[in-house]
Length: 270
Image 1: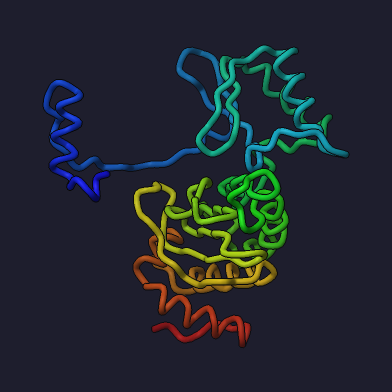
Image 2: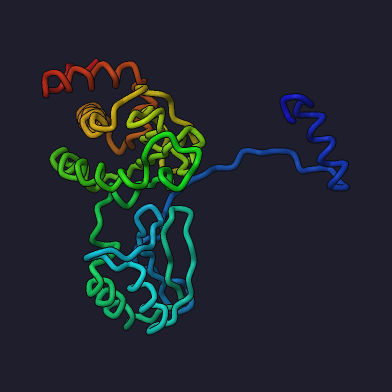
């Protein structure tokens, strides 16, 4: 509609329906980011606890009874509940004494506390994709945990296990897990093949760019590790992954990473 009408005409029509002029647009500084995972004071003497729910999936399976654990926390402790934009849960209005109770309930049901998961997993997110979504052309939620499993030791070897960067995966270009403003976006292209995007950031205020297309799923771990090796070697002080890719340019990152994939060693700085 905006394309057909033009922005000014569209705004005029909205103002006509609204009944008064709209305030002119102005720049807004976006700063700081927090997924609210872990324990926090909530300002009234109480606490809230953010529990990471991997890809938002609440389920019971052998050795991992998340659904049962959540039910027990709600029944036994009675906290308030909030849902985050990163597919996780906040338990609110907690007392200091509830810390140990919640940790015990989670461990008794095979669930890691938020403090026990890796930074990489904490900032990852997938859409539901196959088999639930009729738009999906590739896997997402069912394969991202395994991809994270493979990446975690590689990230640790590079000394980046404490660095926060977003890795988001979807089963089609409709982008329900917001891959297009992530540091690393992985978007389903066709069966078992994906498009990789680089250069967004945690603030979510910059779109990334296409890095490689039609990448087989089995190659994703190595491709991502190569990018991270480049980042580790070439980054500036306090530079985030997305800012690094945006500054260096994806052509240079691709050249460096491709040489690393062939030789297993760092390319010369450009």
